[in-house]
Image (cartoon, rainbow, N blue to C red; front, side, top):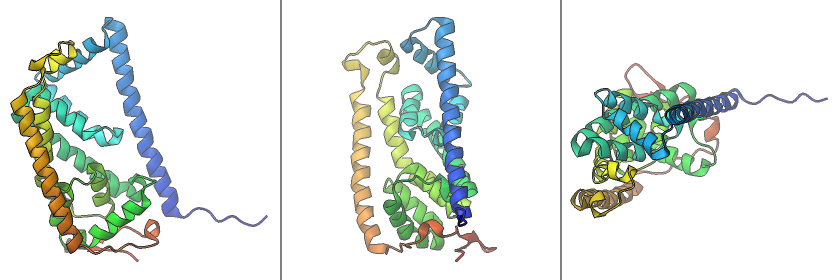
Length: 271
């Protein structure tokens, strides 16, 4: 029988990393579901009462720490950052909701960055090879030349948040400019969704008391205005990006090695 060559090492590593993240996400969701079900059965509480108890827990002095921890682990569980940000705004209002969301979002960005750096392309999603290669081609040179500017632009034009985190880690973008670009670039979106959450009377919604007072129209209008302005600015920036960036798509992208960082902090790609 002819010898069947084994899969390339980078493909085996990528598969292991992808399964590793799926296992972690599954474990987190099982733990959450188990805790939720255990509380409901032991207390006899309904779904709405259990959710209200979770909200009350976040309102305790230790609540912000719990919220930030949840936000930090969120990318490992494939949980939407928008939903977590909305909840923060609904509980603490536009000021502290924004503060806690900024802390949590940047800690989650840090976690995803180091996850991508450790496990490479295995953490990048499958099934989007063309779009992914296009993004890598457009931004790899800019990330090498000016990591802060590239990350800032990627945040401002609303590219998928976690995908940018994993990609920056995989490409070994220097951490400090990556984090600074993330902090500044994510501010408009964070404030927009925090205001949207702050416009909701969460206790009334959980209690089933739906009326006009459930939504604060002025806060919601502020959020909508920021959202529309962000979309307009993002479209303008995308047009500018199309003029500034030239696709550099490699046909064998999945087989390339991530760049390394030399002593001067610049990026070098391994052939």
